[in-house]
Image (tube, rainbow, N blue to C red):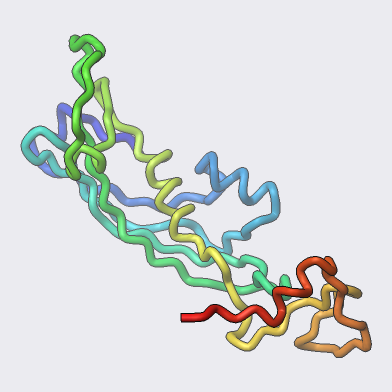
Length: 180
C-alpha cells in the first residue's frame, strides 16, 4: 500500500485493498487481545490524487467484525463501511525547527506530514478501521446484561441474587433533587 510520489504527479493512482486484518499492526494487537474478530478481509479501493501542495487519498473500505456485547458479552456481528479521506503534506526537511508559536488553521490540523519518495498508507488505514469499530455494541436494544453478583446472562436466565449494597455514604444521594 505504497504511493510513489513521483508517479502520482503525472496522474491519479487507484489503490485496491484486500488485506487480512493481521497485516495492520494495531488491528493485529486487538485480535491478539481477543477484543475483536475480523470475519472477512479488509477490502476496498482508494484513489490518491496530487492536489496543489497536498496529496489526497479518498475511498471506501469494508469488512465484517465480531465484538462482544458491552452488557452481556455475547458476540455481536457488525458490518463496517469506512469512508477514507486522508490528506498528506510534504515535510520540508531543509526547514529548521520553529521556535515561535504558530496558530494552526483547521486545514493544517487535518494534514498528515510525510517525507521521502513514497507514502505508506498501512498505518493511516489501520487507524481509520480502528476508529470505525463499534464502541458499545449491543446484541439487542433491550439487553439486560449480566447479574453483578453471580454473573449469569439475564437475557437467558433469571437469578435470585440480592442487588449489591453500595457504600452507605452514597445512600443519601438516592433522594437528592435539584431545585431549579
